[in-house]
Image 1 (cartoon, rainbow over the protein chains, first blue to last red):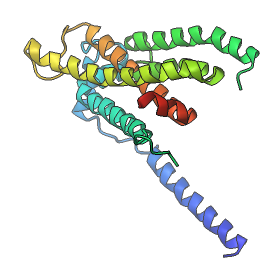
Image 2: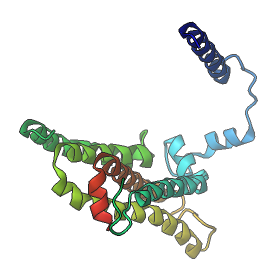
Image 3: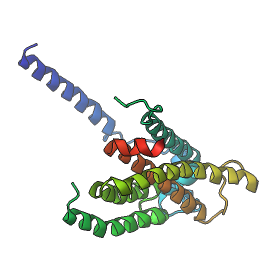
Image 4: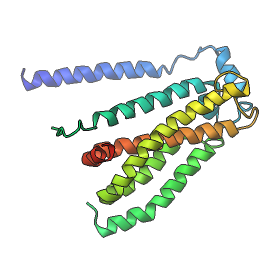
Length: 93
Length: 135
């Protein structure tokens, strides 16, 4: 595979990634209808206890998801630390 | 790696970083911030010390961070379960219509992220320190 093929391939790859990302931005999509959930969040986030909308959603409306997130974080770090343990006397290669 | 200049600079900077991390965590209700970013800033303060100092202090530190890690995760669980004891469903707001519950959860999350990141960093940065602290 000559160097020029690699360049073309990487260029092609970058272009596809760029297209996907730009599509994700979805700027021109104006007629996004306001779903009732968004409106509910926007109207009542002060009663949820915080002026910071993100915080009130993260810890109050969707605290169960945050609980899952904390557990995922915990399990991943515990797993890594377990992997680093030594069997008794066994040398870590 | 640990020349006196870097050591003193690290020691001089860390309290301010930790204070800022605590501010971001505690004021997550009012201003942008909260548990996760606050915890990361706190971790960066401690990591500054870990990088600049040799392994003895880190050995003592390593074993504690794992405990804080466990503490943080299960404190969130306890706060959630306490919602049931109060009578509501899981994770109900213990103090309705004010932000104590949010701040409490913030602190717990920040503790968790802080301890987890520090333990992770110690694991990757000083592999032999973690080995001797776990057996």
